[in-house]
Length: 458
Image (cartoon, rainbow, N blue to C red; front, side):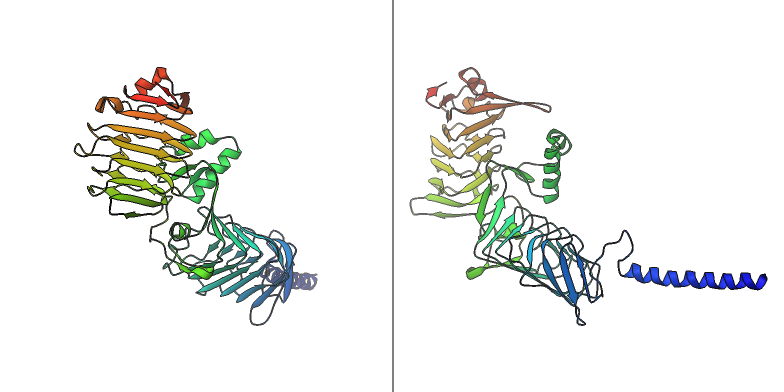
Protein backbone atom coordinates (compact mmCIF):
# COMPACT_ATOMS: atom_id res chain seq x y z
CA UNK A 1 0.00 0.00 0.00
CA UNK A 2 2.87 2.37 0.88
CA UNK A 3 4.53 1.74 -2.50
CA UNK A 4 1.23 2.46 -4.32
CA UNK A 5 0.86 5.85 -2.58
CA UNK A 6 4.43 6.70 -3.51
CA UNK A 7 3.69 6.06 -7.20
CA UNK A 8 0.54 8.19 -7.03
CA UNK A 9 2.46 11.03 -5.40
CA UNK A 10 5.19 10.95 -8.05
CA UNK A 11 2.64 10.95 -10.89
CA UNK A 12 0.71 13.83 -9.30
CA UNK A 13 3.82 15.96 -8.83
CA UNK A 14 4.87 15.34 -12.43
CA UNK A 15 1.44 16.37 -13.67
CA UNK A 16 1.58 19.55 -11.61
CA UNK A 17 5.01 20.41 -12.94
CA UNK A 18 3.97 19.84 -16.56
CA UNK A 19 0.80 21.90 -16.09
CA UNK A 20 2.85 24.70 -14.56
CA UNK A 21 5.21 24.77 -17.49
CA UNK A 22 2.30 24.85 -19.99
CA UNK A 23 0.51 27.64 -18.11
CA UNK A 24 3.68 29.69 -17.82
CA UNK A 25 4.30 29.37 -21.56
CA UNK A 26 0.70 30.25 -22.39
CA UNK A 27 0.82 33.18 -20.03
CA UNK A 28 4.01 34.52 -21.60
CA UNK A 29 2.28 34.47 -24.99
CA UNK A 30 -0.88 36.25 -23.83
CA UNK A 31 -3.10 33.17 -24.28
CA UNK A 32 -4.61 32.89 -20.81
CA UNK A 33 -8.23 33.92 -20.25
CA UNK A 34 -8.50 37.61 -19.33
CA UNK A 35 -5.28 38.59 -21.11
CA UNK A 36 -5.09 40.39 -24.46
CA UNK A 37 -4.16 38.31 -27.45
CA UNK A 38 -1.38 40.56 -28.63
CA UNK A 39 1.34 40.41 -31.23
CA UNK A 40 4.31 38.62 -29.70
CA UNK A 41 7.06 36.36 -30.98
CA UNK A 42 4.66 34.06 -32.88
CA UNK A 43 5.20 33.98 -36.64
CA UNK A 44 1.63 35.16 -37.26
CA UNK A 45 -1.63 36.07 -35.56
CA UNK A 46 -4.79 38.14 -35.76
CA UNK A 47 -6.91 40.50 -33.69
CA UNK A 48 -9.88 42.77 -34.36
CA UNK A 49 -10.07 42.23 -38.11
CA UNK A 50 -6.30 42.59 -38.65
CA UNK A 51 -3.74 39.87 -39.44
CA UNK A 52 -0.03 40.11 -38.81
CA UNK A 53 3.15 38.23 -39.54
CA UNK A 54 6.61 38.79 -38.12
CA UNK A 55 9.93 37.74 -39.66
CA UNK A 56 13.17 36.85 -37.91
CA UNK A 57 14.39 40.43 -38.08
CA UNK A 58 11.44 41.62 -36.00
CA UNK A 59 9.56 43.31 -38.85
CA UNK A 60 5.82 43.01 -38.27
CA UNK A 61 3.61 43.28 -41.36
CA UNK A 62 -0.08 44.01 -40.77
CA UNK A 63 -3.07 43.66 -43.10
CA UNK A 64 -6.79 44.18 -42.58
CA UNK A 65 -9.53 46.79 -42.33
CA UNK A 66 -11.52 48.71 -39.73
CA UNK A 67 -10.45 50.31 -36.46
CA UNK A 68 -7.11 49.16 -35.12
CA UNK A 69 -8.12 48.01 -31.62
CA UNK A 70 -6.56 49.03 -28.33
CA UNK A 71 -3.40 47.07 -27.51
CA UNK A 72 -3.14 45.38 -30.85
CA UNK A 73 0.55 45.47 -30.01
CA UNK A 74 1.17 45.36 -26.28
CA UNK A 75 4.45 45.37 -24.36
CA UNK A 76 6.42 43.47 -26.98
CA UNK A 77 10.19 44.05 -27.17
CA UNK A 78 10.53 41.60 -30.11
CA UNK A 79 9.00 44.06 -32.60
CA UNK A 80 11.73 46.10 -34.33
CA UNK A 81 9.56 47.74 -37.01
CA UNK A 82 5.89 47.81 -37.99
CA UNK A 83 4.56 48.09 -41.56
CA UNK A 84 0.87 48.21 -42.47
CA UNK A 85 0.22 46.77 -45.92
CA UNK A 86 -0.57 49.26 -48.69
CA UNK A 87 -4.04 47.68 -49.11
CA UNK A 88 -5.00 48.26 -45.47
CA UNK A 89 -8.24 50.15 -44.90
CA UNK A 90 -7.83 51.64 -41.43
CA UNK A 91 -10.54 54.01 -40.23
CA UNK A 92 -9.15 54.73 -36.75
CA UNK A 93 -6.13 54.25 -34.53
CA UNK A 94 -7.79 53.59 -31.19
CA UNK A 95 -6.30 54.63 -27.86
CA UNK A 96 -3.11 52.65 -27.10
CA UNK A 97 -3.47 50.48 -30.21
CA UNK A 98 0.34 50.33 -30.46
CA UNK A 99 1.43 50.25 -26.84
CA UNK A 100 4.96 49.78 -25.49
CA UNK A 101 6.50 48.50 -28.73
CA UNK A 102 9.64 49.90 -27.18
CA UNK A 103 12.19 48.53 -29.64
CA UNK A 104 10.24 49.47 -32.78
CA UNK A 105 12.35 52.19 -34.37
CA UNK A 106 9.94 52.73 -37.26
CA UNK A 107 6.19 52.48 -37.80
CA UNK A 108 4.65 52.91 -41.27
CA UNK A 109 0.86 53.09 -41.42
CA UNK A 110 -0.76 52.88 -44.86
CA UNK A 111 -4.50 53.28 -45.25
CA UNK A 112 -6.75 53.58 -48.29
CA UNK A 113 -9.47 55.03 -46.03
CA UNK A 114 -9.68 58.35 -44.18
CA UNK A 115 -7.98 57.89 -40.81
CA UNK A 116 -8.86 59.25 -37.36
CA UNK A 117 -6.23 59.15 -34.61
CA UNK A 118 -7.27 59.02 -30.95
CA UNK A 119 -5.33 60.00 -27.85
CA UNK A 120 -2.19 58.00 -26.98
CA UNK A 121 -2.68 55.88 -30.10
CA UNK A 122 1.05 55.18 -30.42
CA UNK A 123 2.49 55.04 -26.93
CA UNK A 124 6.04 54.17 -25.90
CA UNK A 125 7.46 53.70 -22.43
CA UNK A 126 10.45 55.83 -21.24
CA UNK A 127 12.97 53.11 -22.12
CA UNK A 128 13.91 51.81 -25.55
CA UNK A 129 15.12 52.76 -29.00
CA UNK A 130 15.50 56.41 -30.04
CA UNK A 131 14.83 58.18 -32.37
CA UNK A 132 11.46 56.78 -33.45
CA UNK A 133 10.09 57.32 -36.94
CA UNK A 134 6.32 57.27 -37.57
CA UNK A 135 5.00 57.66 -41.13
CA UNK A 136 1.30 57.81 -41.97
CA UNK A 137 -0.07 57.62 -45.52
CA UNK A 138 -3.82 58.15 -46.01
CA UNK A 139 -6.22 60.27 -48.09
CA UNK A 140 -7.20 62.33 -45.04
CA UNK A 141 -5.95 62.26 -41.45
CA UNK A 142 -7.77 63.78 -38.49
CA UNK A 143 -6.11 63.98 -35.07
CA UNK A 144 -8.79 64.14 -32.39
CA UNK A 145 -7.06 62.88 -29.23
CA UNK A 146 -4.48 64.36 -26.88
CA UNK A 147 -0.86 63.30 -27.43
CA UNK A 148 -1.58 60.69 -30.12
CA UNK A 149 2.19 60.08 -30.42
CA UNK A 150 3.84 59.77 -27.02
CA UNK A 151 7.34 58.54 -26.18
CA UNK A 152 8.24 60.36 -22.96
CA UNK A 153 11.82 61.68 -23.36
CA UNK A 154 12.58 59.85 -26.58
CA UNK A 155 12.88 61.68 -29.87
CA UNK A 156 10.07 61.22 -32.41
CA UNK A 157 9.95 62.14 -36.10
CA UNK A 158 6.39 62.05 -37.40
CA UNK A 159 5.45 62.38 -41.08
CA UNK A 160 1.87 62.60 -42.35
CA UNK A 161 1.34 62.26 -46.10
CA UNK A 162 -2.28 63.09 -46.91
CA UNK A 163 -4.45 65.27 -49.13
CA UNK A 164 -5.63 66.93 -45.92
CA UNK A 165 -4.61 66.89 -42.27
CA UNK A 166 -6.88 68.30 -39.56
CA UNK A 167 -5.47 68.79 -36.05
CA UNK A 168 -7.99 69.37 -33.30
CA UNK A 169 -7.21 72.08 -30.78
CA UNK A 170 -4.85 71.05 -27.96
CA UNK A 171 -4.03 67.58 -29.27
CA UNK A 172 -0.41 68.11 -30.38
CA UNK A 173 0.74 70.85 -28.01
CA UNK A 174 2.98 68.51 -26.01
CA UNK A 175 5.20 67.44 -28.91
CA UNK A 176 7.66 70.31 -28.57
CA UNK A 177 7.88 70.16 -24.78
CA UNK A 178 8.52 66.42 -24.43
CA UNK A 179 12.06 65.19 -23.95
CA UNK A 180 14.82 67.47 -25.22
CA UNK A 181 12.49 69.29 -27.62
CA UNK A 182 14.08 67.82 -30.77
CA UNK A 183 11.02 65.96 -32.08
CA UNK A 184 9.78 66.96 -35.54
CA UNK A 185 6.50 66.88 -37.45
CA UNK A 186 6.19 66.89 -41.25
CA UNK A 187 2.77 67.57 -42.77
CA UNK A 188 1.10 68.43 -46.11
CA UNK A 189 0.33 71.91 -47.43
CA UNK A 190 -3.35 71.39 -46.59
CA UNK A 191 -2.91 71.18 -42.83
CA UNK A 192 -5.53 72.81 -40.64
CA UNK A 193 -6.02 73.66 -36.97
CA UNK A 194 -9.60 73.04 -35.81
CA UNK A 195 -11.13 74.93 -32.88
CA UNK A 196 -14.67 73.89 -31.88
CA UNK A 197 -17.45 76.28 -30.94
CA UNK A 198 -18.25 76.84 -27.27
CA UNK A 199 -15.87 76.69 -24.32
CA UNK A 200 -12.33 75.78 -25.40
CA UNK A 201 -9.80 74.85 -22.70
CA UNK A 202 -6.04 75.08 -22.89
CA UNK A 203 -5.56 71.71 -21.17
CA UNK A 204 -7.07 68.87 -23.14
CA UNK A 205 -7.79 66.93 -19.94
CA UNK A 206 -9.92 69.84 -18.74
CA UNK A 207 -11.69 69.90 -22.11
CA UNK A 208 -12.56 66.23 -21.70
CA UNK A 209 -13.82 66.86 -18.16
CA UNK A 210 -16.01 69.74 -19.34
CA UNK A 211 -17.40 67.78 -22.31
CA UNK A 212 -18.17 64.81 -20.07
CA UNK A 213 -20.12 66.99 -17.63
CA UNK A 214 -22.07 68.61 -20.47
CA UNK A 215 -23.06 65.17 -21.81
CA UNK A 216 -24.39 64.28 -18.35
CA UNK A 217 -26.24 67.62 -18.04
CA UNK A 218 -23.90 68.64 -15.22
CA UNK A 219 -22.31 71.76 -16.69
CA UNK A 220 -23.22 73.81 -13.61
CA UNK A 221 -21.47 71.26 -11.39
CA UNK A 222 -18.34 71.63 -13.52
CA UNK A 223 -18.25 75.41 -13.07
CA UNK A 224 -18.96 75.14 -9.35
CA UNK A 225 -15.91 72.90 -9.03
CA UNK A 226 -13.47 74.72 -11.32
CA UNK A 227 -14.63 78.32 -11.73
CA UNK A 228 -12.29 79.72 -9.07
CA UNK A 229 -9.31 77.78 -10.47
CA UNK A 230 -9.76 78.74 -14.11
CA UNK A 231 -9.08 82.16 -15.56
CA UNK A 232 -10.82 83.15 -18.75
CA UNK A 233 -8.29 83.96 -21.44
CA UNK A 234 -5.45 82.10 -19.73
CA UNK A 235 -7.12 78.72 -19.16
CA UNK A 236 -10.08 78.86 -21.52
CA UNK A 237 -11.93 80.99 -24.03
CA UNK A 238 -15.47 81.01 -25.36
CA UNK A 239 -15.54 80.39 -29.09
CA UNK A 240 -18.67 81.75 -30.76
CA UNK A 241 -18.27 79.64 -33.90
CA UNK A 242 -16.08 76.72 -34.88
CA UNK A 243 -12.92 77.67 -36.77
CA UNK A 244 -10.80 75.72 -39.23
CA UNK A 245 -7.67 77.69 -39.98
CA UNK A 246 -4.64 76.87 -42.11
CA UNK A 247 -1.45 76.02 -40.23
CA UNK A 248 0.88 79.01 -40.49
CA UNK A 249 3.79 80.75 -38.73
CA UNK A 250 1.20 82.65 -36.68
CA UNK A 251 -0.16 79.52 -34.98
CA UNK A 252 2.38 76.72 -35.48
CA UNK A 253 4.15 77.23 -32.14
CA UNK A 254 1.11 76.85 -29.96
CA UNK A 255 -0.39 74.05 -32.07
CA UNK A 256 2.79 71.94 -31.71
CA UNK A 257 4.25 73.37 -28.51
CA UNK A 258 7.34 74.68 -30.27
CA UNK A 259 8.33 71.47 -32.09
CA UNK A 260 10.05 71.80 -35.46
CA UNK A 261 7.33 71.59 -38.13
CA UNK A 262 7.89 71.12 -41.87
CA UNK A 263 4.92 71.82 -44.11
CA UNK A 264 4.85 70.47 -47.67
CA UNK A 265 6.30 72.84 -50.25
CA UNK A 266 6.78 75.61 -47.68
CA UNK A 267 9.54 73.87 -45.77
CA UNK A 268 10.03 74.65 -42.11
CA UNK A 269 7.38 76.86 -40.53
CA UNK A 270 9.14 79.23 -38.17
CA UNK A 271 6.90 80.72 -35.52
CA UNK A 272 7.62 83.37 -32.93
CA UNK A 273 8.75 80.89 -30.28
CA UNK A 274 5.71 81.54 -28.08
CA UNK A 275 5.02 78.69 -25.67
CA UNK A 276 1.69 76.95 -26.07
CA UNK A 277 -1.26 78.97 -24.85
CA UNK A 278 -4.63 80.12 -26.05
CA UNK A 279 -2.97 83.39 -26.87
CA UNK A 280 -1.00 83.84 -30.05
CA UNK A 281 1.11 86.42 -31.79
CA UNK A 282 0.52 89.79 -33.38
CA UNK A 283 2.70 91.85 -35.67
CA UNK A 284 2.62 95.59 -36.34
CA UNK A 285 3.84 98.14 -38.83
CA UNK A 286 3.75 101.94 -38.68
CA UNK A 287 3.79 104.34 -41.60
CA UNK A 288 5.18 107.87 -41.79
CA UNK A 289 1.87 109.41 -40.71
CA UNK A 290 1.94 107.57 -37.40
CA UNK A 291 -0.74 105.00 -38.31
CA UNK A 292 -0.01 101.68 -36.57
CA UNK A 293 -1.50 98.65 -38.36
CA UNK A 294 -1.80 95.39 -36.42
CA UNK A 295 -2.30 91.86 -37.76
CA UNK A 296 -2.59 88.54 -35.95
CA UNK A 297 -4.82 86.48 -33.72
CA UNK A 298 -5.43 85.47 -30.12
CA UNK A 299 -5.15 87.51 -26.94
CA UNK A 300 -3.61 90.95 -27.21
CA UNK A 301 -1.09 90.77 -24.34
CA UNK A 302 -0.43 93.41 -21.66
CA UNK A 303 1.72 96.35 -22.84
CA UNK A 304 1.55 95.30 -26.48
CA UNK A 305 1.50 99.08 -26.99
CA UNK A 306 3.17 100.96 -24.18
CA UNK A 307 3.98 104.66 -23.73
CA UNK A 308 4.53 105.44 -27.41
CA UNK A 309 3.83 109.08 -28.27
CA UNK A 310 4.69 108.59 -31.96
CA UNK A 311 1.45 106.67 -32.62
CA UNK A 312 -1.32 108.84 -34.05
CA UNK A 313 -3.79 106.15 -35.07
CA UNK A 314 -4.24 102.41 -34.38
CA UNK A 315 -5.96 100.03 -36.81
CA UNK A 316 -6.42 96.28 -36.42
CA UNK A 317 -6.53 94.61 -39.83
CA UNK A 318 -9.96 93.38 -40.92
CA UNK A 319 -8.66 89.78 -40.90
CA UNK A 320 -7.56 89.91 -37.26
CA UNK A 321 -8.97 87.32 -34.88
CA UNK A 322 -8.69 88.89 -31.46
CA UNK A 323 -10.13 86.85 -28.59
CA UNK A 324 -9.25 89.10 -25.66
CA UNK A 325 -8.02 92.60 -24.92
CA UNK A 326 -5.89 91.89 -21.85
CA UNK A 327 -5.38 94.41 -19.05
CA UNK A 328 -3.16 97.27 -20.24
CA UNK A 329 -2.74 95.83 -23.74
CA UNK A 330 -2.98 99.36 -25.22
CA UNK A 331 -1.30 101.48 -22.58
CA UNK A 332 -0.48 105.21 -22.84
CA UNK A 333 -0.65 105.76 -26.63
CA UNK A 334 -1.38 109.34 -25.59
CA UNK A 335 -1.36 110.91 -29.07
CA UNK A 336 -3.51 108.25 -30.74
CA UNK A 337 -6.81 110.01 -31.41
CA UNK A 338 -8.41 106.99 -33.08
CA UNK A 339 -8.39 103.24 -32.37
CA UNK A 340 -10.24 100.77 -34.62
CA UNK A 341 -10.28 97.14 -33.51
CA UNK A 342 -11.55 94.59 -36.02
CA UNK A 343 -11.97 90.95 -35.04
CA UNK A 344 -13.51 88.02 -36.89
CA UNK A 345 -13.89 86.27 -33.53
CA UNK A 346 -15.93 87.00 -30.42
CA UNK A 347 -14.02 89.49 -28.27
CA UNK A 348 -13.68 89.77 -24.48
CA UNK A 349 -12.45 93.03 -22.90
CA UNK A 350 -10.69 92.98 -19.52
CA UNK A 351 -10.24 95.81 -17.01
CA UNK A 352 -8.30 98.89 -18.17
CA UNK A 353 -7.58 97.23 -21.52
CA UNK A 354 -7.25 100.61 -23.25
CA UNK A 355 -5.55 103.04 -20.90
CA UNK A 356 -4.52 106.67 -21.52
CA UNK A 357 -2.67 109.02 -19.18
CA UNK A 358 -4.03 112.43 -18.21
CA UNK A 359 -2.10 114.29 -20.93
CA UNK A 360 -2.53 114.02 -24.69
CA UNK A 361 -4.99 114.28 -27.53
CA UNK A 362 -8.72 114.68 -26.90
CA UNK A 363 -11.32 113.55 -27.85
CA UNK A 364 -10.39 109.91 -28.39
CA UNK A 365 -12.44 107.65 -30.64
CA UNK A 366 -12.51 103.87 -30.08
CA UNK A 367 -14.43 101.66 -32.53
CA UNK A 368 -14.76 97.90 -32.08
CA UNK A 369 -16.12 95.60 -34.80
CA UNK A 370 -16.67 91.95 -33.84
CA UNK A 371 -19.41 89.29 -33.98
CA UNK A 372 -19.82 89.47 -30.21
CA UNK A 373 -18.27 91.74 -27.56
CA UNK A 374 -18.19 90.98 -23.83
CA UNK A 375 -17.04 93.62 -21.35
CA UNK A 376 -16.12 91.84 -18.14
CA UNK A 377 -13.39 94.02 -16.59
CA UNK A 378 -13.80 97.22 -14.57
CA UNK A 379 -13.15 100.44 -16.51
CA UNK A 380 -12.03 98.75 -19.75
CA UNK A 381 -11.68 102.19 -21.43
CA UNK A 382 -9.89 104.70 -19.23
CA UNK A 383 -8.55 108.15 -20.16
CA UNK A 384 -8.70 110.16 -16.92
CA UNK A 385 -10.35 113.50 -17.76
CA UNK A 386 -10.10 113.21 -21.53
CA UNK A 387 -13.19 112.67 -23.67
CA UNK A 388 -13.83 109.13 -24.91
CA UNK A 389 -16.27 108.22 -27.67
CA UNK A 390 -16.79 104.45 -27.79
CA UNK A 391 -18.63 102.65 -30.60
CA UNK A 392 -19.38 98.91 -30.52
CA UNK A 393 -20.56 97.29 -33.75
CA UNK A 394 -21.54 93.69 -32.99
CA UNK A 395 -24.37 91.21 -33.28
CA UNK A 396 -24.42 91.17 -29.50
CA UNK A 397 -22.86 93.17 -26.67
CA UNK A 398 -22.72 91.95 -23.07
CA UNK A 399 -21.69 94.35 -20.31
CA UNK A 400 -21.01 92.78 -16.93
CA UNK A 401 -22.54 94.56 -13.99
CA UNK A 402 -20.34 97.24 -12.35
CA UNK A 403 -17.72 97.30 -15.12
CA UNK A 404 -18.50 100.84 -16.43
CA UNK A 405 -20.27 102.75 -13.61
CA UNK A 406 -17.75 105.65 -13.69
CA UNK A 407 -17.58 106.08 -17.46
CA UNK A 408 -19.71 109.21 -17.39
CA UNK A 409 -18.22 110.68 -14.23
CA UNK A 410 -14.65 110.95 -15.54
CA UNK A 411 -15.84 113.19 -18.36
CA UNK A 412 -19.47 114.21 -18.78
CA UNK A 413 -18.97 114.44 -22.56
CA UNK A 414 -18.10 110.73 -22.89
CA UNK A 415 -20.36 108.77 -25.26
CA UNK A 416 -21.08 105.08 -25.80
CA UNK A 417 -22.81 103.70 -28.91
CA UNK A 418 -23.86 100.03 -28.96
CA UNK A 419 -26.05 97.59 -30.94
CA UNK A 420 -29.72 96.89 -30.33
CA UNK A 421 -28.83 93.47 -28.91
CA UNK A 422 -27.02 94.84 -25.87
CA UNK A 423 -27.37 93.20 -22.48
CA UNK A 424 -26.28 93.59 -18.87
CA UNK A 425 -25.06 90.52 -16.96
CA UNK A 426 -25.94 90.57 -13.28
CA UNK A 427 -24.08 88.02 -11.14
CA UNK A 428 -25.46 86.76 -7.83
CA UNK A 429 -23.40 83.86 -6.47
CA UNK A 430 -24.06 81.04 -8.96
CA UNK A 431 -27.02 82.73 -10.55
CA UNK A 432 -26.43 84.71 -13.74
CA UNK A 433 -29.13 87.04 -15.06
CA UNK A 434 -29.02 88.59 -18.52
CA UNK A 435 -31.24 91.65 -18.94
CA UNK A 436 -31.56 93.95 -21.98
CA UNK A 437 -29.80 97.34 -21.88
CA UNK A 438 -32.55 99.98 -21.91
CA UNK A 439 -33.09 103.67 -21.26
CA UNK A 440 -34.08 102.76 -17.71
CA UNK A 441 -30.80 101.05 -16.76
CA UNK A 442 -28.30 102.70 -19.16
CA UNK A 443 -27.63 105.60 -16.81
CA UNK A 444 -26.58 103.40 -13.91
CA UNK A 445 -24.60 101.00 -16.12
CA UNK A 446 -22.53 103.79 -17.75
CA UNK A 447 -22.41 106.35 -14.95
CA UNK A 448 -24.58 108.92 -16.67
CA UNK A 449 -22.70 108.99 -19.97
CA UNK A 450 -24.62 109.60 -23.19
CA UNK A 451 -25.56 106.14 -24.49
CA UNK A 452 -26.88 105.38 -27.94
CA UNK A 453 -28.48 101.97 -28.39
CA UNK A 454 -28.75 101.27 -32.09
CA UNK A 455 -30.50 104.40 -33.45
CA UNK A 456 -32.16 105.62 -30.25
CA UNK A 457 -30.34 107.86 -27.78
CA UNK A 458 -30.81 106.82 -24.14
